[in-house]
Length: 218
Image (cartoon, rainbow, N blue to C red; front, side, top):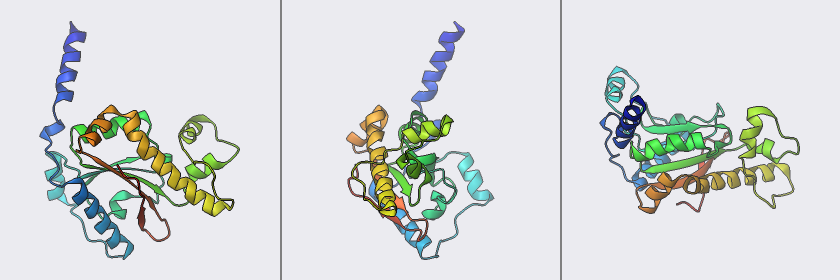
């Protein structure tokens, strides 16, 4: 009986948006434009101050309404809130080496899509990505890191020169991980098919701070 009651309670919890979350006021196109404008400010060293104080924290304690989901690398140099000049509660960030779409990342993403109603998903790679570089090598690391590297997709027919090859592999991996979102997640696939969510991808330059947006978005 206790197991039945627990299962029923869990189903009820998952059936409703957490903390009474409401749908984002932005469309996917508006959300993308906001990120692009924020990145332009970051690149120009003109980032605007964001609400981080007590008033904003009290507001967010009542619920979150992120207008975009960003899946990116765990690299300390890649911080989406700074890159896109956003504040607390503005974007739902998922970070893992190689920005891979593993089941744990997808579970969190499904929550943001289904319950927080974020209209935009961004898969963001970055220049000089160590995970992609490792995936290109002949000797792979062991342990849990090795499991992560096996999920990185570098593509085929890469340029002969190492710097160009790495850049191409990084872009290939970003596109691949973006494609996996709808292949590995029925929730994300359904929301994309019903045009409730849009998926875009890009590559962040560590040197310039600029995000280069890739073609082939869903």
